[in-house]
Length: 308
Image 1 (spheres, one colour):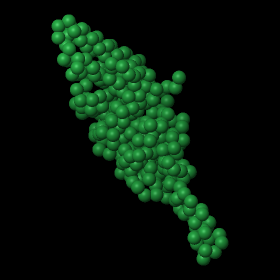
Image 2 (cartoon, rainbow, N blue to C red):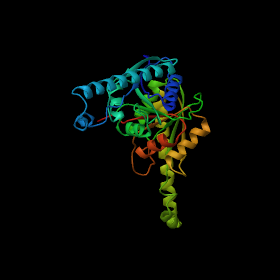
Image 3 (tube, rainbow, N blue to C red):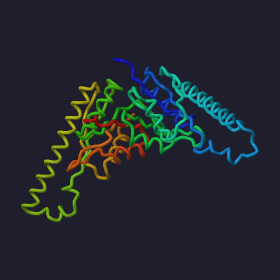
Image 4 (cartoon, rainbow, N blue to C red):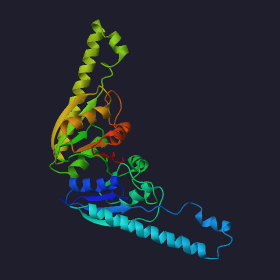
C-alpha cells in the first residue's frame, strides 16, 4: 500500500508543533507537506501613498516589496522549522502565496493529499495560521479528511474510536481510517438516544396497553442501533481495521458520551463523519463533530460524505 500523503498546517506556534509531531507518530513513514501561509499586506495599503506626500515617488513601492520579500523569507524559515519537527515523516516545506483567509490557502495546498492536519490553536502575529477560527473554518469547508490535534494530546498507543450512525459520512469516515491506519485496533461505537424512554410526555402515557407499545418501540430502536453498530464493524473490518463494536444509549448528549468512551478506552484517535442522518436515531451531525473537535483532548479525524 502506498504511503499516506499528508498536508500539515504550520505557523511556528506550540500548537502547530504538537500537530506535526503527533502526525509523525500516527503516520510514521508518510509523505508530508508542511504548509505555511504568510499573511498578505493589509487591505488598502497600496493606497497609502496619498497620505505620504513627502515620500519620494517609488519609495513606498520599494518598501512594500521589501516587506513582502521579508515576509516570504520568514515564512520559509517557519516552514523549514516545521519540517524539523516531522521526525519519521518524509516531509518538505511549502510556503503558499500570501492569502487571507488562511483556511482557503490551506485547502488549496492540500489538494491531492489524503488528509489535512492542523492544530487547534495558534499565534496571532503576521504568520497566524492555526487559530481556532481557522480550524473551525476548515471543519465547515474542507472537502477532504481533516485531522484536528489538540494541544494536550495524550499517548497514542490506544485504539481508534469510530463514531458510527450508518450514514454515508460515517461510512466515509471508516474508509478513511482504514486507508490511513490499516491494521489498527478500532472500537466502532453507535451512540443513540431514545425519544421514547427519555420523553416526559411519553413516560406520562407509558401505562397499560400504551406502556407496552412504548416498550416495544424502545426495544425496536435499541435493536436497530445494535444492528447499525454491527454494520459499522463489518465495514471497518473490510476496510482493514481490527474492529469491535459497542452500542451506547446517550444520557448526556452524543459527543459527550463519545468523549467519555474515549477516556475510558485510552483511545489515540476519534474518527467521525461530518454529518449524519435524522429520525429516531441519535446521529453524528455537524454539531457532534464540532463538539468533539472543540472539547476532546484526543485528535479528531473528520471525514465528509461523498458527493452524489
